[in-house]
Amino acid sequence: MNFSSFFSNNLGIDLGTANTLIYVSNRGLLIDEPSVVALDKNSKKVEKIGLEAKRMLGRTPGEIEAIRPMKDGVIADFDLVEQMLKYFIKKVQRSPFFIRPRAVIGVPSGITEVEKRAVKDSAESAGVREVYLVAEPMASAIGMDIPVEEPSGNMVVDIGGGTAEIAVLALSGMVCDMSVRIGGDEMDEAIVSYLKKTYNLLVGESTAELIKIEIGSAFPLEDELEMEVKGRDLVAGIPKTLRITSTEIRDALNEPVSTIVEAVKQALEQTPPELSADILDKGIVMTGGGSQLRGLDERLRQETNLPVNVIDEPLTCVARGALKIIENLEKYKTVLFESRRSR
Image 1 (tube, rainbow, N blue to C red):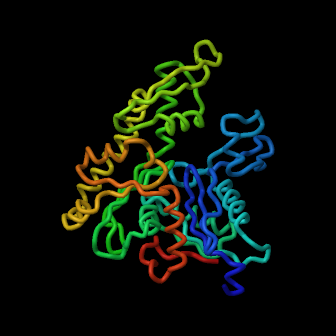
Image 2: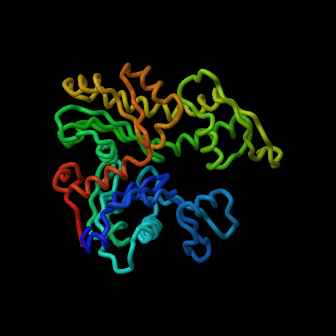
Image 3: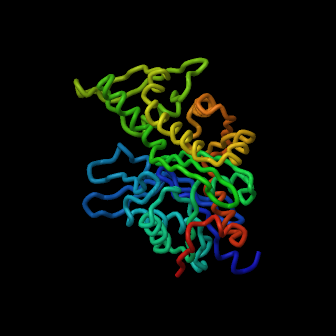
């Protein structure tokens, strides 16, 4: 390792709605923390970032507010994203005298020009010397070692916290892509709304997420599950405990899940016949945190009649792929969104 590579870092960043992940050259995954910032309401001063801030979600004292500055895969609060990135990048730097890093950042494929500019500006303000952007399905595929430069087609479905990205990739490009702003967050909201409507029970987003992980499903299970849920009774205003089943939660999740399934079908309809034949052979590859919902692969199998594979470590492949791209820029430069701006 030469002197400058000791001090400089190439970064692969997945700036996600739910979590931010950063892979660093020669050092692996160094950041995997929630994209949450805790703010003092009065002074607007940032108190905590990441894991410590997430623990405050729904539990904060009056003057502290826990905020998620990313919404639907894009920046909702520019200043907070900049501070969050600055904090994470500082955490991965080995030396105060570091050479500013270069980074590839995974973004939704349906991102607008304005949203791209916001991501680049916030990364540059956080101390990144050269910023490149790549569509998340492309970064995922590269992170999974799929040879995207070949003419053979591959379909990737990447379900994150804020978006579901569906893309057919061939010859280093996206032949067709669908980006729907529905992901794990909307699933959590659907659970909150179902419990409120059906049982007058109010639960926070952390509880809804736990319910989704513990008993959520997209397809009937061999053995249906149940769990105890604590929340606030909206009529009596006091804490209440309920037992709910996986069947109920599947009904609650049906709308967001159906939207994702429909988007996959639409992408398949737009796929050129030659590439459809490739997908028929290889199947659909699912990645992202949302792909871990029980039975989602089976639901897609039933609705598309195609093989569906969920990869190992689906949460990390966007950041892994982003790092691979920055380390092999010549090879992968055609997969990036328009040329970078650097300072």
